[in-house]
Image (tube, rainbow over all chains, first blue to last red; front, side, top):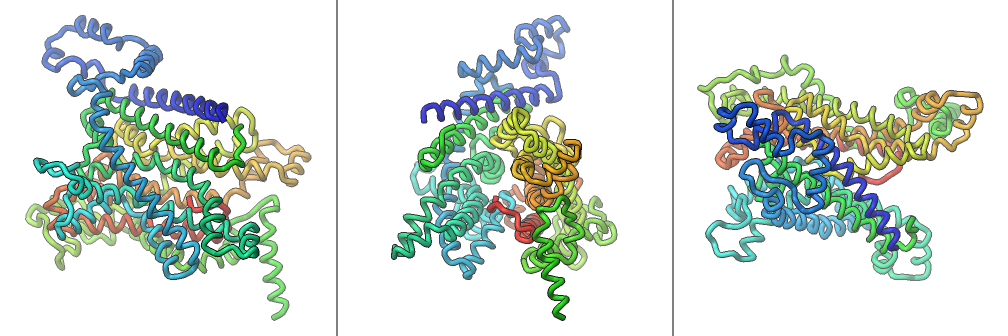
Length: 320
Length: 310
């Protein structure tokens, strides 16, 4: 087991290395001379070429790309992601300000998807070809087909603008005393919007997974022994059918962060997704690089946890 | 009568046996085969296919169908609600919403077809090489695929599009170049099992070249799963374009795209009082993507492609 975890960890590090290399190349392809970001425009206009060269040397921008990459990597390992071009603040502290809100949003969305998606998938499979099953199927098709922003705007239109039930966006009511109810009322719509696509996927996957298991010999054996139907479902089938779902959930996590960018924009949610958009608009490359690296690390950790969980839950997996 | 039934039965059996034969001509068998009959039975897929057909015709004949020039600014008709003259009203620049909606169908269909064509080619070639040769080639290709897969692709496409500049063709290119890992994994899986079959062995024994075995002998047997995956891929590509355009990082106005037509709806006043500006384009994205997904599901049933909902 220990060797297996170390192996997965090493593969994860290799993948992370690839990811940072790709990102670094991309950032260096961005248009414009990065030196202009570090010298105020009024100074730049007056300064002679010698001054610019001196600054370039001080900043290390005259070094080859490969050298700069390893300097960046070395700093990264030591917890320094560089400085935001906009205000010179460390990238890491700007990300820290925002990461909590994103965790809140994506975490709630994932939780909603699991606790709603799996049960409706189970019901749909048990009642195959019933009206409920057809409705669930139609719902899951719609769920994966609806654009996140359209769903978000539609819900804001109905629940905030027409019914006046929920706030249109933000983390909490500004000026109001912090309360759980206020927080939840702000969280529920964006979290639901972000969860819909995953919810639909989980429902569909659970349904087909259980239908597969229903035809297995061990199910017939259990029934033949006189095991009660509910026990067959929850004790025998779910145990086997749910194992691959761990991988499916892990594979959805990158999509969750992608969806968070749009959801945070629609609901003015001050998380990392909006920070990434701000960085793009301001052409703040160090910040953008930092955000994408952090997201990549988070996704890799999630995958690693899923792999380990998978091996723990299913003893048939041999740790190779 | 009896004879005809026998012949039908025989033909069906032949269709079933086809995946063991060296070549499978999908287009020949599609016409009257079990595949077509199975697809026809999937009602939602038929509805979806019909809608898409109409949409393709609308996109092709947009200049003939659109009542107005989608770029014609008319400031006297600023944000007019739907009327007899403008069925879906006019937008912030007084342009006819219906005409823009019709022209925007071209963008979505182009992105779907363009991006998917690119990544299906890349993914198929890499997957075929990976599965056929195995060993270290397989290892390297699959690790790169893992790296791309574990990354939030929407975020990296966002970054890529920012670098090359947001435009229709750059979006197609970015999606096309980055989205191949899914297809390559499917193709690789099929190749891994097919390369052990007798017909491959026979081809090798007769001295066929590897490239010929990959493309002329094995690949035709993998066409069905590729078509199914490509169909679902088209739906995702259209959604991705809509999302990028909505964020202002996709197709740039004044060129209409269903995604960028919703940009204005980020203002609460427009969202609240001018639903004709944002409901039609949003609904078009939903219906189009839904139709494609139905067709994909129908094709999966019809081709009897293994594998669960992805």
